[in-house]
Image (cartoon, rainbow, N blue to C red; front, top):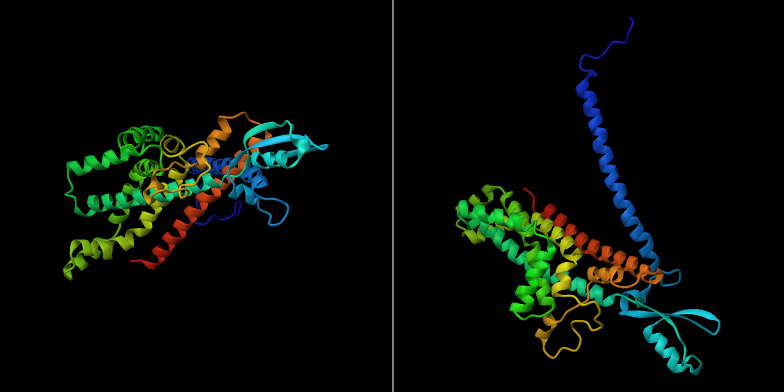
Length: 348
């Protein structure tokens, strides 16, 4: 035979298959381009930030960066050596050493100390806002999915919720200033930040939670009702547990958005510099929620754009960004593990 025999079911080359192969390569290149860009961005943050966060000496972690407040860095020469000290240590050196009393130094703000107040503020903002968002969002989703009469009004509500998801975060920040900071007179505080951030992620939580509730088979409801359970008992015991993995997915999306927003936090909850933590010097327990905090996104914004840039501020920028990514990843990973646990436990 002049040519090898072809299998009867073997694919025949034609223009359609060639175009499909070309399209697959385009999709493949686009996918790997996105991955490469992401790897470059996160790789630079991890590489630069790890030099600030980790050290070459035991315990191999820059504990001061995690436990202290931001300080001004003093760079100076003393006894023939170039030294770098934070403001507190610099003042202590001048007080303890008469030869250093008239010492002059070059100063760099926010370039010494650590970011502990910003870490604490970020964690408090995420936990508080997501608690409010999940409580309101899941309640709204249960009503829309299980109780509301489906009609034009409910359809209009759903469309409004979807439209809110596209509103820029700075608009929510201005709304929070007008309603919570000024009208309710909460001032710049944790409480104002919690409600502003919660309202910002509510559309995501409501939409994802409602879709998760709808995915639970109708037979679960009908079987429970047939056995004499009330509607709420049916929802609580036969619907919500099986919808919980999807609800936790919405919380993961919400955490990623809440933690990374700067404008709403800047307008309603954060200070550029605040040494005291919310639980310090309280005259009453309610004062806790009426205090402003530092936050990692706002701290990165201030250090990156509001002060002169130099090698000292650069290491603080990348170190803060690296810690910020680790915190968000830790919270999101916890939610993912809990979601997977519930998904394995409640199957149908």
